[in-house]
Amino acid sequence: GAGVSQSPSNKVTEKGKDVELRCDPISGHTALYWYRQSLGQGLEFLIYFQGNSAPDKSGLPSDRFSAERTGGSVSTLTIQRTQQEDSAVYLCASSLALGGAGYGYTFGSGTRLTVV
Amino acid sequence: EDQVTQSPEALRLQEGESSSLNCSYTVSGLRGLFWYRQDPGKGPEFLFTLYSAGEEKEKERLKATLTKKESFLHITAPKPEDSATYLCAVLEEDDYKLSFGAGTTVTVRA
Image (cartoon, rainbow over all chains, first blue to last red; front, side):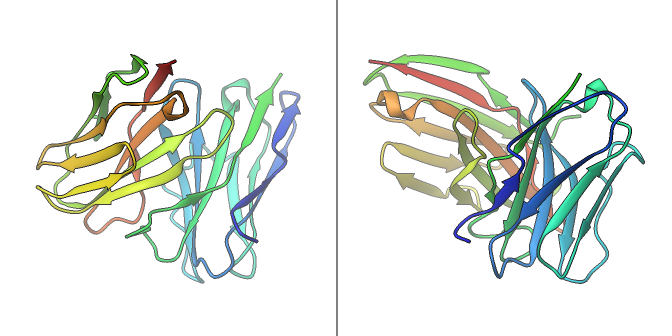
């Protein structure tokens, strides 16, 4: 597609439930990133993938968070046993090269997660 | 310690009233500094990349400049459509992820 696509755009879930967030990057972009944006906060790095290399998971806040990227394309971020503090906008981005030098990242519109 | 600090948090301008946003950063080696614009309910949209002190980039009413410690985003004669949150991010040498500031929310009144 022309841009980074994320689904769902909004998700309301009950505390303790698991959720899956999907990201479809721009075709040909080898690097994919997940960030989290809480109200009034800057973007918080979660994880990135580059081709077939092992992902950098250093930003994942707890072991309830995991992500995978299948076939070097679509990525899924999974949050298990959701807590209210997980409520945020989850943004996915992709870039041609790791680090996004030049044109930076292209972001999707995000998934707004609300845990009630 | 925060790597990227943006000020002010919010800026209210009258249409045509020029102003500047500040982004100060502390990194051991800068590979690039990025400016993004974010509209409500949307993801950040890329504006500029700056690589070295003294560099300047322009796009319509926006001009970004870079020194060794900070970057400025100048908005000249803003219009209501320039209302948005402007995000600054840095990419350190030997790293692959951007570190973002909290942003400056600009509101331009007609």
